[in-house]
Image (cartoon, rainbow, N blue to C red; front, side):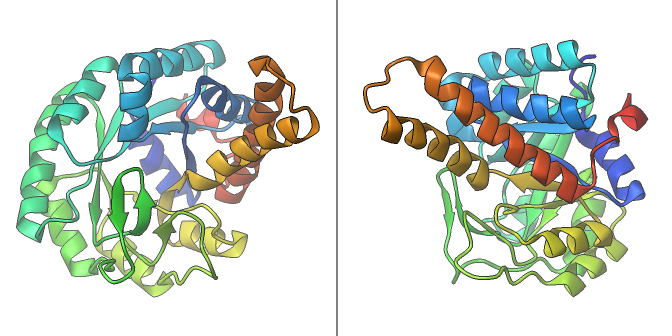
Length: 288
């Protein structure tokens, strides 16, 4: 099965009141781990890469690895570019085979956000590629994008409706109180705002900053209309901690296969946990 656009995948998820777990991966082993988790749970999957990872690995390498996973597993898998602010990188990734891209122009005034999103929509629509856009500002650190608490702002439901109408964007990531990175306390998610945004727009909504959000809050957000949940920081920590554990016990180890195997397994187990939280296990069959 070829890589698919996440547009229909997320529309099905919103109608079915579940979410598709989307994982930011930075190595081949991390990519393999989330794919193995999806295979075991018969789950649809969104593989994501940040702009930093695209520059580190190259979009062709990432796209070919994701295409191989889709071909071998026969699972509905989408490949998404996360939080991209520049047009050339988006074009580069679409040409490489990405099936979903995020144009993050949330740092600009509303009118400019609309303009930049429409520019990406023109290219993506012709290629059958999903587009995700952000309204409001999600706090925290994502790659080289830093939004401190003072500058974070929540999305306005009326603006969300107007934004979707003006851009035709098929997927919307509204800022609703989550943050990128690991939370120092309990996330202050505005569930009433999620409901009002979901009532105002028909497109699937995306929850950014999903790492460390308690299970009951994930369940509530998904029930209200979040059809995609992004997981990044927790995955990196699980991967890195597993490698550190190997070197703690065996500081002389120099065979990458010996420390990558437990790292991969740690990511797989965490990915399965997040998929279960989102309610996507067993849903692959409805998207084939």
